[in-house]
Length: 217
Ligand code: DX5
Ligand code: ZN
Image 1 (cartoon, protein in one colour):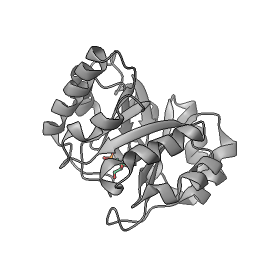
Image 2 (image 1 turned 120 degrees about the vertical axis):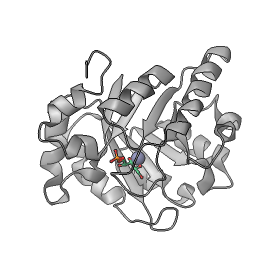
Image 3 (image 1 turned 120 degrees about the horizontal axis):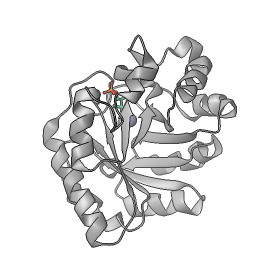
C-alpha cells in the first residue's frame, strides 16, 4: 500500500518544510492537486508551485490535474517535474490523445473519474495508463466525506486488471482516513491519497501509518 499525502491540506506559508517533513514520515508519493476554477469550483496552484518544491525531494510527484482541457498544460507540468500525470476523462474530448502526450514525454500517465462518471469511461485507455484514480469525493476541496458507493469501481478495476493481464495502479482520492482506508484496501486499492486526515493530524506519522494494512484500529 502506497500513501500519497495531498499537499492541498498543507500549510502553504511553509510548503517546502511541509513537503520535506511528510517525505521523512514515510510518504510514498506527493499528491499535487492542480485546480483551475473551471473544471472544479476552486483554484489551488499550478506548475510553478510544483517546480519550486521539486528540488527538495526525490519522492514521486503525483500530479492530479483538475483542469479543463489539460492538454494545454501537459508540457508545463512535465517541465515542472511531475512523475505521474493524471487527467480527468470528463475534462477533454481527447483523453486518448492526452494520455499519448504524457507517455510521449516519458512520464507515467493516469486517468481519473468523478463520482458521477461510470468507470467504464476509462476502458478505451486502460491498456495505456500506469494508474487509474477513483474519486471518492467530488473534486475541488479537501475535507469532504468519503462516498462509499465508489468502491464498486475499485473492485471492477482490480478484476479488469487481472482479466486483461494489465498492471496499472489503483488509486483512491477523497475522504480517506483510518476507517475508510480499510474499505479501500479490501476493495483492492494500491495507493491512497489523503489530505486533511494527514495534514490535520497532531501526529502525522501515526496518521500515515494508520492507513497501511498492518495497522490495527
Ligand atoms: C479533492 C482533491 C484531493 C483532496 C483530498 O479535490 O483531489 O486530493 O486533497 O482531500 P481529503 O483527503 O481531505 O479528502
Ligand atoms: Zn487529488
